Image (cartoon, rainbow, N blue to C red; front, side, top):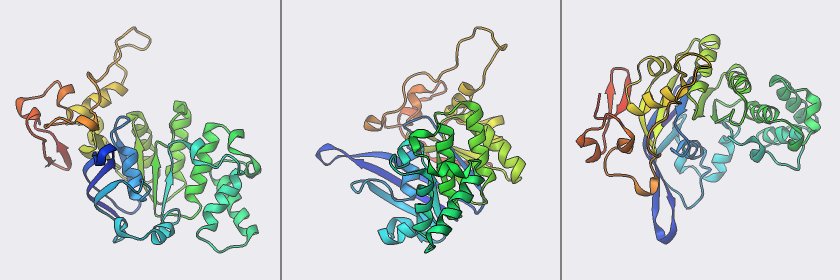
Length: 322
């Protein structure tokens, strides 16, 4: 359904310079599939999400192809893209407080998403908006509330109602539970899976969220979700959730997962696991592997040239040390 090939995105800088943020991204999503994207903040995950919907600044350089149901979204005129956004591809943004209009009741904001794609009467728009607010566990009376009157979890539910309202075939959820406590995060992620039959692209920097996603998918769909692990604008490992949880191959994936798993006895004093060094900077990427300076298994070749992405069984790895 969605096929992204050799996607490269660069932001314009001063003096006509370009800073590469996505550096050759390849993946696909089948109808009804759940695909996770995992990586630390600043690795290009949100840029990837915005690229799919062509929501990046006009000065941004975007190369490659993003094919959705056979159409290359990168060459479509804005008028055609507006028909796809919301109706065929919906997005749940990371900051719900910023994504919603602060001076408009939330019910009307759900109505406006529907009205952009349906020529319905005001009464029917209001009825549908209330219906979708109810589907995500909100009392329809909340439709009259303004965003500042709602909690973070309620705001996320309003965004989910907006995303579901036109019954899209693909939903992009960019850190849909950021800023919430772990219990609320699990509830929001499970709700995204429960309330839709669409394909899902779920972006997160927390491996624990993928464990929640894995449980939800196994319980509700019986599908094996895949995960893309991103570092410095590239996919460094791709495979099933089970493969990553039990036998991650890339040193970065191993380190990232280790940081999310407590070791030792509960309550015992222990040193928190951490990845050494600093995240790679897009402004001064090294000639070789972007993770080389932080990797405990690096070899001489790692600093000399960039590794290719190779198939290892049923997964893909970008690493010289296998």
